[in-house]
Image (tube, rainbow, N blue to C red; front, side, top):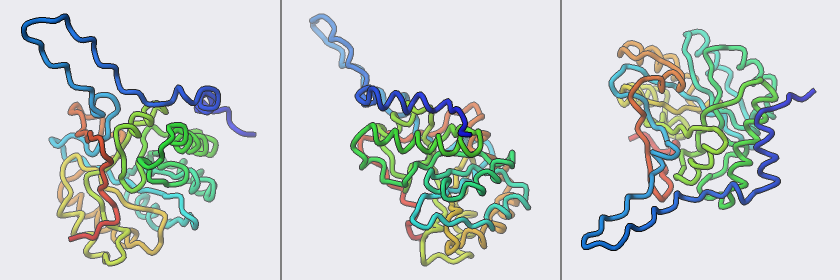
Length: 276
């Protein structure tokens, strides 16, 4: 029997009134009466104020979040070695689950949900370039169908959204907020999709670039990536540097509001970039 889901009303709302989903920036305030000197109108609110695009937590605390994307692909692979290392080392992590990946690996998703140190996030249903999805309705479908898939399998409702390829603009972040999701990007791409990266280079790169409040992105859906081989040394090295490894939710509990990125054009910190 399918679960009765709190995200279902969002899907019904889209079907009945798709136009209501359109993102409309706040209206400009009415111009003041004519005067000798007119003050300039206040700036339009940025994404940082209306729908944050979070890249890190507080820079004043030695906490760091390891995050792992499970991207929906034509193969929907799963590298169980990544999860085994996290469990063996007692390392909390945030897992951004693709809806298509979840449906292809239902037992795995249910198993992962049994571990309290793992937090689930939303990584869209089909892994598109989100700023290029022009219809607001389709953006919401990508998010809400994933919410539904994760909830049906686990009873959990993700609170955070990781944009595929790290590509997001304030329109997408605003729409994500309408689905009760906060957009979580990252400030440290591990480089694990890079075909030229070795295990040692990945470890050295992450340990060198990690900073307080950082969010590291890695992957758990490709066995050819060096992630699983590098992860034990990454975890050991980060802890040796004094980092407390936490979930994104715990990272954002600190008083300092995270850094936000706001721009009209999509930002593209591509996770496949070659490590220098």
